[in-house]
Image: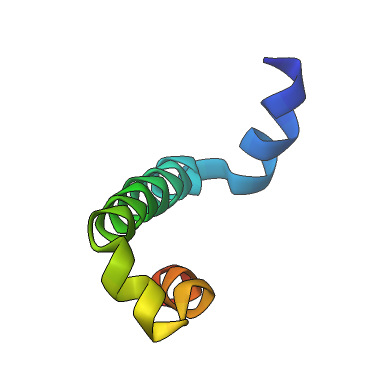
Amino acid sequence: MPKLSWLIRFSGPYLSLLALLIGGLLLLSINRLGLVFWHYQRVLATGELSQILLQGVSA
């Protein structure tokens, strides 16, 4: 765990919130990828695959 010591020092009491943010982003991104693969033909018809994936990160 010595490699993460700088993160613990930097984030301090906000480490749990940072972990929640990263975990939520990963979970929701996996969900978005699943939905894109489920409706791949419809997504392909729009031609906006990159926009759909990037919109999920920014929202």
